[in-house]
Image (cartoon, rainbow, N blue to C red; front, side, top):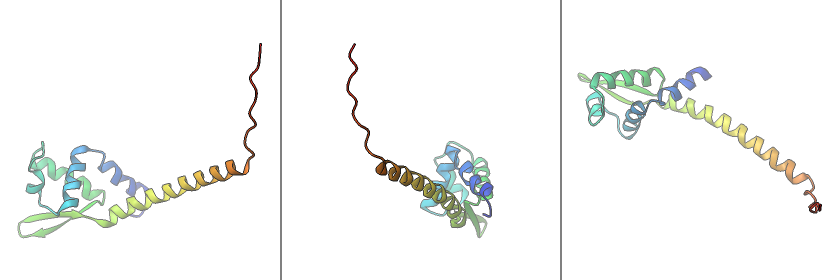
Length: 117
């Protein structure tokens, strides 16, 4: 995945709850469409469509096993998403560290008495 747009496609693909369930099943064990469709509230053709979205987003790959296609996670797509998150996480931590350093270098506020009427 070469750019941020492609990385974000992985997040968009996982936004759908059925697609996320399919992804999680593949994460547990590479599987064919029929296995993945069992127990889901959608048809096998719908599962195939979800798999195409996951594949286009770079999150899964497929290999031929006789007449079946076995789907497995694609670590490159997941790694690209992780890199994107890590970059933002690092920036957030750096900002937090700067805030703490600034607060530690400032003198504590002086308590003020109550105003009386």
